[in-house]
Image (cartoon, rainbow, N blue to C red):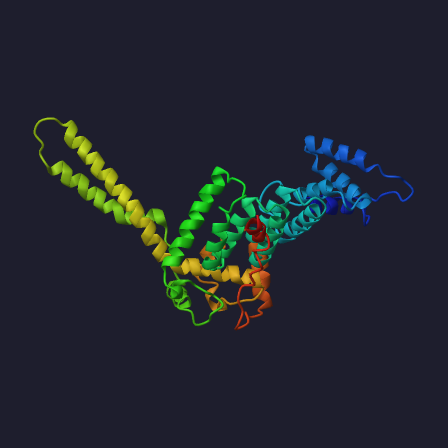
Length: 359
């Protein structure tokens, strides 16, 4: 249960507007309230945490820890949050970092909400740039910016941002960050090798990528496991039958090991081929994802409405979060078209780079 649900339940039970008012004549000891809130957190008493964090914030609006507690309480314990809950959580995160810019978890939570829950990619770029200005040597904001730029198809800028990760003075990356950076580098590298016309730009109405979507709009995205079975399965079966038809003299271990290695080699090659083929077959699906990302980031529509009920769009929509789907529905209902000359609004992300150059 989120903090909002707790407050609404208390309001209904008490029949009053504000279930936890501060007595005007009473002096509030914020530190004592905060200690009580921490005790409630240890006992996992969310109702009490909501009540106490409300009192603390009313008494001391600059209390960063209380705002961070509120941010965590705004999200439900189980299941995905809805649009209202993530919006309230983001507001609390903004308040928390306003009064405590070093609150790294709040930065991370807010960034994830902007990208995964609200789809506000341009706003997320600004968010992570503000984080960079607070902690210029932290690689996390740069990695997040590179991922967002890649989602928007801005691969040239992504490559420039990747180079900054190895600038002198940057903090060492954790193993998970190194792995993600390697994947992003591979994505950006492959995009650089492709023709510019193959990089889908949804804001261009005549882009060839729309034709790819139109051709596949009535089909679901290709499945890599199914593609592998269809591709490598018959080959492996043929190898087994063919190998069993041979008569080997002498030791039986050598034919057995040779046959095993042959099958393993075929499987490994089949996995590689199936990944490549699935990626090509799913190019229209990637285009749909980018088009919806642009719609969410801009708040304007560019995807044809008569394609939305079809299999490709609906299959991909199921992978989005509840809040993302709710906000996308509002954008579609508003029906405001994307301006003809619209382009992603990329903020200045070099404000901290000068520090490294001057040093």
